[in-house]
Structures are given as structure tokens and as C-alpha cells.
Length: 494
Image (tube, rainbow, N blue to C red; front, side):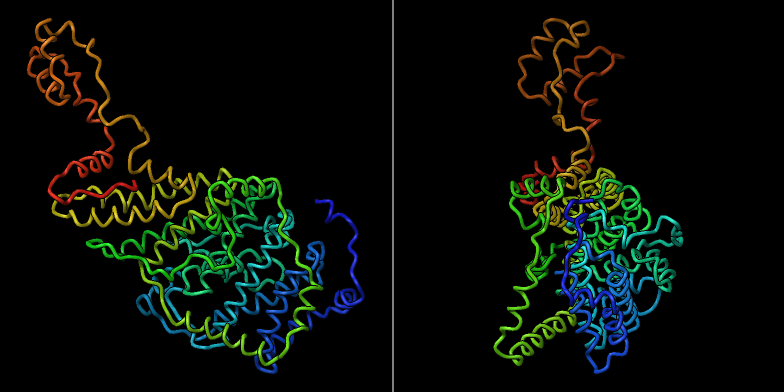
């Protein structure tokens, strides 16, 4: 454990009173009654602020950790049971919430919408603090005494949902299930709610992949929660819904993360590499001075002004929740989120799973068939290349780019037409024929002439054998580039 955590904690009489008399548990009871109306959201925001400023060594205290888990469970239950209006999908049936509740439904109650946003903000704050010392992650991801058996479902998110509902009744175990369940359900929610869910998922992956004994936590991410598989399934489903005979541009307002996000996507390439090295060596986030923030809060000139700012904040959350992400925007959100996970996860197992899911899943089943279409479906290939250009532009992880280029160009990056040595056929051609072949500058004409001059029954060592080994997608891309009828593919970015 870090030396700072091993030192004795020093705090004042107020914190001692809070721990000794279980004040946080009383606040959870007040939030459950929600009297006066609106008390619950203020309690959640207090826990968010309290978690961000307390010394990290206090987090394992049962008087703090258990009320923190209880308030999150309470919020999740209210959000899950809130009446909803179904959008972006058929009403009823197994695919109603295929991409999560945040994408397929809108909560009817104003309080539930704001509470969902505040719950995700609390999760982001919690894992931002856990990132300061990833060894404390066992407080919320302790599942070594039991194994979660996922249901045999086609969708990973459905298996996660069923397993989460099975464990929500327990007061101590199952923290990891409802935390990840909440995040996955609202990954594609519009506005700030979805941005917080995506930031929370990146933080969860970053925290769980950081400890020295990260194998069991990584196994939870990949085998139980199946985070990477969820994102690849989302991309496959959304790509099938996208128009493929003309490219649709993305909406400029569909940002993956909020303005406060400071991950690899917001860094220059050199700064990103330096930051990655600092994270591996155990960099610390900047501590917050609770005294300065309290003085700033008390120095507010008017409570009415603070109330007006809070109403504006809630109005923005509600306005964004009434919208819906387009299929194209949701697809690129999933792509950039998977790319960000690969950028922050310094774990070989996670990176191998990301590449495997892309190469054997979405890229192989959706991108490759679209590029190998016949000339009659030329518009489909043109649209696919337009989407590919945007995908490559938005990619920062070298591992994701490597998986993409393996599918497009093949694992072997040798020239499309390997140079053939002239010493291979001296015994089968006469000196005059060999001299005539050497005078032909065009490779294709030389190969055709050599085939005509070869004795009957001899083996053809020409360029046909080399051409037969060219990767099919790579050959298709090269053939598209050679068209001169005005319909050639614009592959400058590729």
C-alpha cells in the first residue's frame, strides 16, 4: 500500500462525529423517504462532493463505504422502476432494450432523469478517486468467493442485466454487478447522461486493469461483464441499421465525452504517450482542497442565483434526455469508446480481446462483405469507405488500427506483386526468348509473354501464383483505385 495511505489519518471533530454516529446512514434514510420532496437528489449530490474531497484512506471505513453503496443501490432501483416511453425500437419483445435503456426509452418523470444523471456522476467521482490508488478497488469488486453464471443469451447486455437483477438483493456482495450494469444500460443515452456513462466505463476499465493482481478483475470485465463484446455487438447492430447506399454525416453535437473529460482523446499524441507512462508508474490525480471549496460556496452572493444555476443545469439534462441518438452517431460513439478503452487499458489480455472481437466480429462480418460487393452494388462500397475514413480519423489506439488494417490489407504487408527473379526459368526458356522477355518493361505483358513461351506441361512460376495469394479485400481496394470512370474510391486517408 502507498505510504500516504499507510500513515495515520488525521481529521477533525466533525469527521469523527460523522463516523461515530453514522450520519451518512441517516442521510440515506432521509433520501429513501424523500421528504421534503427533492431531498434524495441533494443527498446524492452531497455524497458526490463528499467522495471527491475526503482522504482516500477513509473510503474503506464501513461508516462511509456502506452508505455510499446503499445510496447508489437506492438510486438505481428508482431509476429502473420509473415509467418509460419506448423509442428507437419495437415496443415489447426481446430486442426492446438491446442497446440499453438509455437508448431505447425515455423516463417520464423529471426527478428520475436528473437522478440517473447524478448517479452516474457519483460513479465517475468514485472511480476517479479509486484511480489514485487502484489497490482499493477490492472494496467494490469483491466477488472471489462466488462465481456469476451468465444466462445463455444472444446479447451480452442481456446476460449482464439478468445477473445484475439476481444479485441486487444482497446488501454486501454484488457491488460490481449493479455498478457496471448501470453504466452499460446508459452508454448510448443522449446528452450529458450518456457522456457520464461512457466516462465511467473508461474509468472502470482503467482502474480494474491497473492493480498488480489484475487477472481476476480483468476476467470480470471480459468474461462476466463482457464489456468489449457488448460494444462490438452494439456496433454490429447499429451498422446494420445505417444507410449503406449513401453516407450520412455525423451530428456535430454527438460528443463521446463531456467537456470536463481529460483522457487520451483530449491529448496531443506526444502528451498522450507521456501520460500513459505516468499512469503506469502510478500517477496521482490532483487533490481537492475542501476548505477552499467551502469558502467559495459560502462566498456566493445569493442563494437565489445558485438556485437559478441549478434549475438551468437540470433543464439542460431534461432537454437532452428528450432527444435520441441517430444510428450513425451511436455507431461512432461505440467505435470511439472502444478505441478509448484500448488506449487506457495497459493490459495485454484486454488488448488481445479488443483486437480479436474486431477482427473476428464486426470487421469480418460487416466491413469485409461491404467492400467485396459486386459492381452492381458499387454505392455500398463507396459508402463503406466513407465510413471507414471517419473511423480511421477518429482512432487513436494503435491496437485498434492494427486490427482494422489486418482485415483491410491482410496480415502480410508485402507488395501486391512481388518481384520475380529472372533466374528461375533459364532452363525452360531459350536464351533468345529470355532476352526478349528482358526487353519487355511492363510486368503484366512480360508475365503473359512468358506464359506463351513456356513449354507445354511445365509449371507456371509467374505472377499468377503470387497474385492468387493477395488478400481479397486488399485486391478489391487496389482494383477500385484503378478505375478511371469517375467512380473510383477515395482512399487517401486509408
